[in-house]
Image (cartoon, rainbow, N blue to C red; front, top):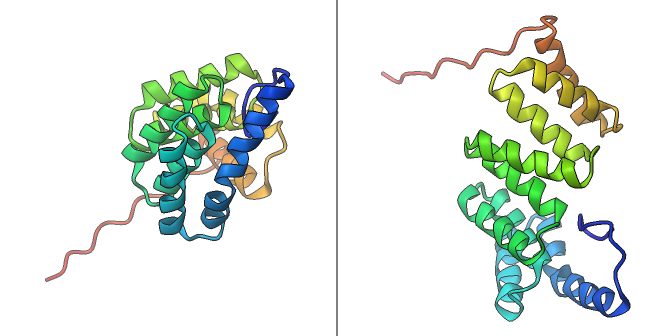
Length: 185
């Protein structure tokens, strides 16, 4: 599997095209990883203009917009990546998380479920579905997905966050109250 794509075997010509697409996004990805979001946006936009069929360019361009918290543009990029490569799991999960942050929980749930149809124990999809159900107050559903997510051995920081949500679901902890906004006189 390359970059969240399906596990299907690639023929040599397809593998070569895929490698060329990856090569085209390396600079933009490196800039994004270094935190230079503006330069990454410029580079990845250039790649998309050269090759509109490069799903990785659309995906990482979406990630750059996501870093900027420009969620509508990020979503558009992820959707374009999926139009080019309908089984691109990374783009499905990213679109789902973006939909969640935009408050479109129904579509986020559909996206997460679509990933699980392709890969039944995908950690990112389990996390997405658990988060959406938790945010909606649907604790029994959230619990199932979050417990399955923990079985994937996630990074400790994420595991601790999920365990905190599970403690709230089980009634062992209370959610933090949002602080009252300060009113300046």
